Amino acid sequence: MEIWDLYDENWRLTGETMIRGNRVPEGRYHLVVDALFLNSRGETLLQRRAHDKPVMPDIWSVTGGSALRGEDSAAAIRRETQEEMGFTPDLENGKVLLSDRMTGETGGYFRDVWLFFQSVPLEEMRFQPEEVQDGQWILPEKIAADETLSAQLGQLRFWKRAFPFLLLESLRIRVPRGLYRHYKGNLYRVEGLALHSETLEPMVMYRALYGSGEAWVRPARMWLEEVTLPDGKRVRRFEQEKP
Image (cartoon, rainbow, N blue to C red; front, side, top):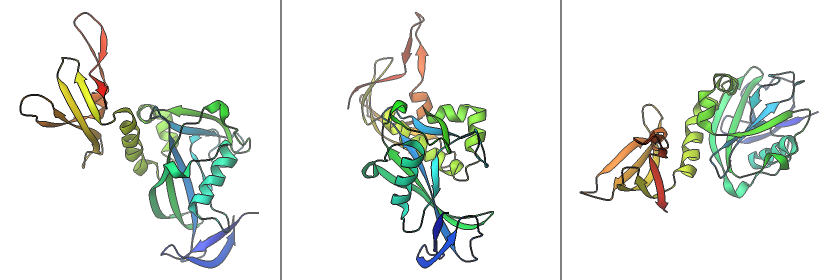
């Protein structure tokens, strides 16, 4: 039996509790946490839910669950990750990416979506059989390009809002600040990445190291593209020379 703490609308503990499975009282909320991970290659961690799960079995999702009595957000996500995936999230290299107040079928809840920068090989994970049957590290843009994965993860109510920020952080790992050479020879300095204000597409901000030193922006997907040279050789559009 799970017992949950209850909060008021201002995220303050009320001293009240409830049992999982009951409806959350009007004007009260419980706490839900989810974990996103990015490894050193900019890949994010997905878990495939167990075949016998009563809700959304066999689909790809992420680690998460409800906080138990006495747990704050950090303690809850630590326990959930340990139970489901068999490793401890690095709280010193994590942050709350999103916090929302939401309403579900059984009443109100607060949701913290955590993002951890942590590399853990799949072979070092120990999946909880009742919860998880498999895991994978995958680049965020490959999720977006896969209709099945996109549809499955889209069932997570926070996913659409969190994804642009997850992708941006992934690209910051793969396109760090520094000196880059264009395949035609010119040098540029990457000064950072940002989201387009209207489309939320990740953009690379960079400056030419020749001429008048103009500042430019380019979609990150183009920055990472390969181009075909006249001799048929494939090369990256930009290659980093030094940080």
